[in-house]
Length: 149
Image (cartoon, rainbow, N blue to C red; front, side):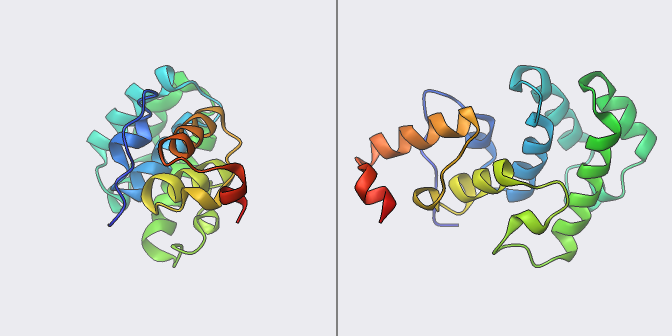
């Protein structure tokens, strides 16, 4: 990996895990429709219990459901975490992470920004990613015209 995203004043979770795209996707599934402060402890506990895509794909559904139940949307999240992890292992997704189950624009943008270093070619809509994206533009002194090119 040649890109190391700079640390920002926003201290996004993605800044800590940028070197592992799978963790970026897991993080985004947790943060989708849930505030970071609420979801972060569950993210770290999930990664602790199931530290690899294969382990999470094969996780006991009831154990995972019990862990994430306090977040809400637990059935949906459980399915997304398990199926995305299986897809991560078995699909050729590097050109388009949105082909992974449960991965939409937010997680795809996070992957492009934090893992691929392709931040100039995305226009994030998520508030935290917008803040980080603007931070990068300021840091690298990129104007709107340069970003559009």
